[in-house]
Length: 102
Image (tube, rainbow, N blue to C red):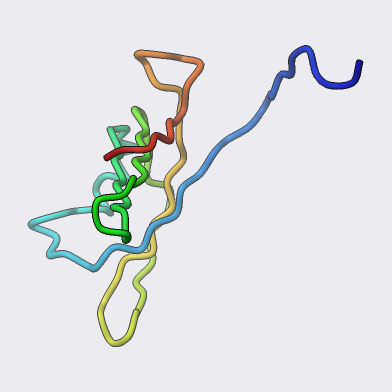
């Protein structure tokens, strides 16, 4: 027979990049989180575009912001962000999860 019995991935560091619209520092201070090396929950929900279909939800229990640059999307100020996905303290074998949601 052909195929895999198991596999093991070592020394990986998953990352997520995002570019949300910029907020006032009083509302969301990305730089303080980055300089303080804060680790926190990250939740990204991509709703279905089909109206009533299935969307996608990405969760990370221990995301740490590693970079922030100002950006521009069609004359709208954005933040180009990069997150490292660290081992989740609740489940050390999981850095992130991707789920289908209704």
